[in-house]
Image (cartoon, rainbow, N blue to C red):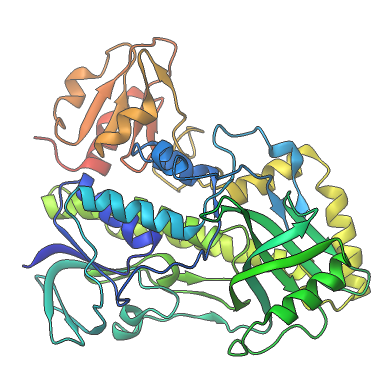
Length: 479
């Protein structure tokens, strides 16, 4: 074997996965077809749950220190959800994908993991022992497992014949990185009476400290073929249709047309090959849910691949990646499709649709409705269907960040191992059988005992008799 895991694609998903494998002590090779890292901002927001995960790896503070990354207010279909502003410790933040990619790539480089660029994949072949990947250059890499993180047009997905059902794009909208003048400082979703609309939110600053914005435009007659270039004049006309002279274009840095295509791989596992990120699911980019969902795919899969490589993974563990993550992306596709419909991106002005959106906007004034939508958008409402879920409300949810004497529980997850919070010391003898896979802590007797997986999800709480079976279920046979 040349390496244990080959990761194809060095976007946020692939980079996050490489870091998880590094943490698990697993040799990994990360390749990308591009000769250099993209400078395009692409996605622009980081959910609360993703920030928690970065905090659990000690990466959040250094990431936020890379620049001005303002917090924002959640929205659903352009309807703001102000009651959710202070609901989570880590509010939604504007961190462009290009910044995340650069940060993660540099972090990996300090660990002597470097992206092998200009590697165009041309073949994938599996056997009982591993995967052979071939490249246009004639190079070959042999690995035990391969993960496709190579985007919506995934070469790996095509080569393994993975089904990718769903809906093709029926409409395009413009997405552009710009500098604007006028009253654009806050996140806005604005629509004119004749159906033209604009969405503006912050992207931090350019190298000279000037504010950058992500601008999206749509409305009647604005759905053009993807290959038609986006021009400055088109943006100026679109801004004028919505804002009049209040907001003007100062600089166009990058623009593209995006579609409302919605597809999801039928299976995330194909033998020794796994699909993650946009290779597994694509949808209209609303709320940066694609990037965040891909990062969470990587966090779910990384420790499980590590367990398999080290030889202690229970038989079901690798299959649990699809079982847990496929429903999550399916739910994202549904909420994005609902948002796309309510936003009336083509500006049809359909009275039935307007009536439905008006009723929906009224419902969103209710706290419980805002909280439910925030759970969908923040990633904090994800609950995996783990054993014991029915009996214990904590199981399957992201673990709370508990104060345990001098440290927080999230800080204790930076080892990449599981964590047993055992405040009364009742379970020391049981935990001692998994010393290299599960850490044990608990200095605060007021904290409820719980077992947390390396990806930050609670997998046991409550019933003392269920702890040992839970340890075996997630961390394999004891020593």
